[in-house]
Length: 502
Image 1 (cartoon, rainbow, N blue to C red):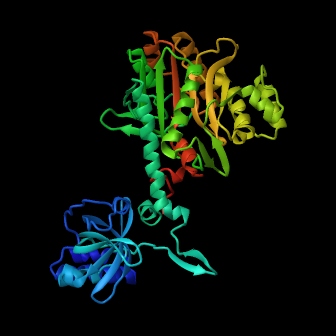
Image 2: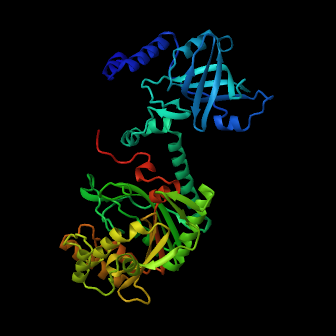
Image 3: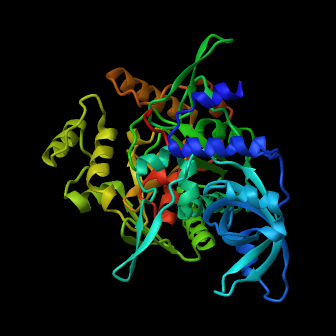
C-alpha cells in the first residue's frame, strides 16, 4: 500500500532522491517521522541570553536551512519559530549512526538537537550538538534564495517572490520569507490589543450566528447555502450588526465581536470575499463619543504594536495621533470636485455624476450615486485619517436621523491611506422609522439593487421592545492591519486569501 502511494506522487529528480533517502533511512531502522521531541529553547532566546563561559545546555528543533557537510564534522543552520541558529555536529560526539543519518539529510528537513551553547572562532553564537534526531524528512525541495556579491553589493537570486505562488503556497512563503511571518505576528498583536482595549472598558465579547436565515447590517450580496435537515436557504452573514443590537435590547451595555464576514463581491487589493471585522455596540453613547473612542483605539494600537503613532503606507507617512480631521461627506465632495450635492434630486445627482465623467448603473438610487461620486473622486485622496460625517439617510438605513440636519443621519466613516477603515452610527432605535427605512430598501431591491437590505421582522420586533440610545462601530481588521504593517494588498495580511483554482 505504501509503495502504491509513493508511485502516485509526481516526481522530479530531486524528489526521487529524497524518496530514496527516506527508504534507506527506514531500511536502516531509523524512523524519519518520530512522534515527539522535547524543546527547551529557541534560537532568538539563545542568542539574546548567551553567556560565553556558561556552555548552557539546550534542546532545539526546527527546519534545516543551510548545510556544510564535511568529513567527521559539519555545520548547519536550523530555523525555528523565532529565527535561525548554527549547529556544530561532530561524528565522534553524536555517534556514527546519528552522523550517518545527518549525511542523508537535505535543506528543508526538520531536526532536533541537544547540546550546549558556544561561540565559534568567527564569533557566531552556535550550538555544539551532543545528540541529533531526524524529526521529519522533507520530500519536496524548498526554494532557498541564493546570495552573491556583485560589484561589492549583495544580490539575491531565486527568491520565492512570485506573489500568486506565495499566496497559494503560504506554507512555503512562511518558511523562506521571514518578514511574512513578522507581518502575521503583528496582526495577532493588533487583534490582541484591540480585544484588551474593549474588555478593559467592561464590554463583553460575544459570538453571533454566521449562518443566518435573513442577512442584513450592510449593503452587500451574500453567499447562499442550503440546510438539508430544515430544507431552507441560509446565508453566510455579511455583517453581525443586527444580532449584536438584539443583545443591547436584551440588557447588555457593551458588546463586541471579532467576526468572519462574507460578501459575494469582487476581489482586489482591498477586498476579499471572506474578511475579518470587529463590531462594537455601546449603550447610551452616540457617534461623537465613538469618534473619540476610535482616535484613542487607533493611536494606542499603533503605539503598542509599532512603538510609534506614525506608519508608512503606500509611500505615505500617516500620523495616527489624535485629533483626526472631521468633514461632512457633502463638504468633502465639494472640496475635491467642486460639485454641491446638498438638497439635490436623484436626477440632479445623476447629472452631476455624468458631468464628472462617472458612468452609473441606472438601477441605483440617490444614496448609491453619492457613494459612487465619493468613492471615485474623494476617498482615494484622503491619506491622513479623516472622519467623513453626516451621510444622506438613504445611504445609512440603520443610522439615527441627524439631530440638527434634516435628511441626514449621524454616521461617520474613517478614511486613512485612501480607503475606509471603519464605519459608525448613532444607531436608529425608533422601530417605526426603522421599518420605514427597511421597506424603502425593499423598494430599491425591486428596482434591481441586489445589495439593498431585506426587511428583518425579528430585528424589528426586538426594537419594538425598546433599545436604548446606542453607538455602533465596525472596523475592517484586515485593512487596519494593512495600514499598520505597510502592506499594500489585503492578500498580504490574510494567511490563505481566496484564489482561482490552479
